[in-house]
Amino acid sequence: MAISEDVYYEGGPHVGDLIFNIALAFTIICIPLTVGAVVRALWLRYRITSRRISITGGWMGRDRTDLIYSEVAKVVTVPRGLGLWGDMVITLKDGSRFELRAVPKFRDIFDYITDKISPQAKVASGAIGV
Image (cartoon, rainbow, N blue to C red; front, side, top):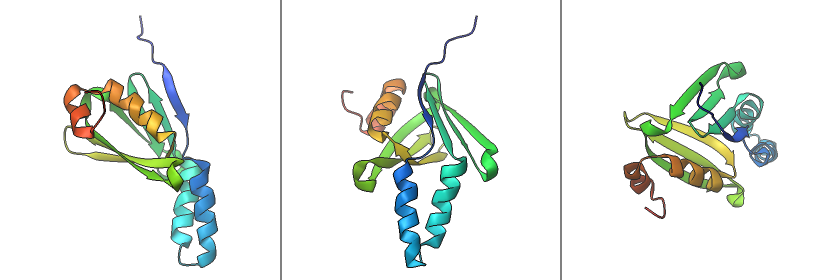
């Protein structure tokens, strides 16, 4: 019997990130940022479930990374786009870090993830209610 895996969030980066970076392209200097935003919009996908965090990205969306909650040591968020989306850095117990860029509903997703991680990781992340 397989254990159920409930999907909390599945999708790509916030569309506001793409719109903002396209607007910056008119300054010419910011064209590399615009290219990055387009690549993220095309090929980056997040899947947050009750068992893991999956990040699919890379060229043509060919790379996939799965993070299980028991390996998470710390989660940090940074608001972007007037707080409509945010970046999230997940640090694992082995010291490796994974950056989730332009995450929609990042505050809700942060709360969901911190509900799933260990008490020590909650303290390191500054989660409320520890």
